[in-house]
Every structure is written in structure tokens, then in C-alpha cells.
Image 1 (cartoon, rainbow over the protein chains, first blue to last red):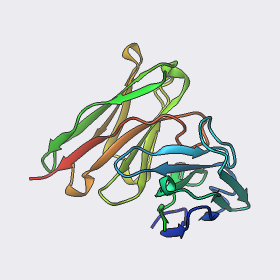
Image 2 (image 1 turned 135 degrees about the horizontal axis):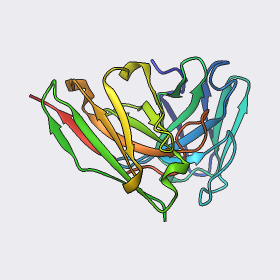
Image 3 (image 1 turned 120 degrees about the horizontal axis):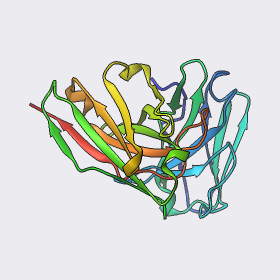
Length: 110
Length: 120
């Protein structure tokens, strides 16, 4: 059981907008920033969003992040086939004094 | 350019220990945390802990307390993760990843991963 809760799967057709949720608690998302990672098959995770809504250089602006209270969301607009990957959220947990990850969401582009 | 280069794949027997290295280049090694994250086959990401290369201070996930040791050698900009008393369910890809602040998860640069297989 992951401390952060994500839907196991999501899907969309090319050009659509999809969102992936990440639910936590006051000790993690509620009091710390959220990072999002994209993992393509057989590769290391790649930072997609940091500090809730900031994009590293090189990440297309089709990807956006938001946070409200104890939940965060990743939105992908203009869905493309190359977006098919696993997506993870993560945050520091003040109570556990650990980094906690979501269980991951497998995005399928239909 | 920033790079994190990890040591090669390992095969270990149950009960043994494994030590994975992560050599950093292209930035000031002591200026960033180094996190260790693992991923079992077909599973999600699991945080193991982190080290502050400047002070040597560590934070370990409760799950690994007593079995994991993270160290660093600043003279060669290398971080190490040693996991002892290996079990079959420790079979996973182990990643190092750079981090910025205390209350933050790994950031922008990750190693290529090291596959550790535990099998009798």
C-alpha cells in the first residue's frame, strides 16, 4: 500500500487531455511540494514536474501540475503516443521522515 | 554535463550483502543530496533513503532501517548504498538520484539503474 494514492491506470486518445490524481495527507502533500516523474519502459524515471507546478527545461508545456490541500494532479494536454508511460507522484512526509511515492499510473494512448 | 553513473549488475545469494556505487560528475557533489530508490520487477518506485554528501548525514526508510547503509567518498564524488541480509524480494533495479532540499523528493538527475538479483 502506497502512502500516496494514484489510479492504477488512465487512458486517452491522441489530442485529448488527461489528468492523473495523487492523494495524500496533511503530513506529506499538505505540507510539502509534489514532484512528478515519467518512466518509459526499461528506463530510469525522468523528472516531469517539480515543486507542484514547475517544469524542468525541456519538458513540453503540454505537461502541467497543480496542488490543492492534500491532493495533487498532473495534466497532459494534446496527448501523444510517446506519452504512453508510467507516471509517479512523490513528496516528503514530515511524520514518517521519508520520501513517499504514489503507486504509479500506467497511461495508455488508445 | 551532470551524470550519475552506477556500478554494474550483481547476482547475490540470500543472506549476502550488496554494495552499489553511484559516481557523480558535472556538478558539486557535496551540494546536493543523493537519494536511493528501488523498483522490483513490474512494481512501482520505492524510496530507500538519502545521504547528505556534505555532512554524511543519512535518512533511511523505516522499512530498511538496520539493513541499509549509505555512505560517500567525497574525494571521488561517489555515493554508495549497501544492503545486507538480502532476500529474494530484494531483487530489483536500484537507482541513485540527485536531490535538492531536505523536505523534497529526488529531482532532476538519475543514475541508469543497477539490477540486483538475489537467487540461490
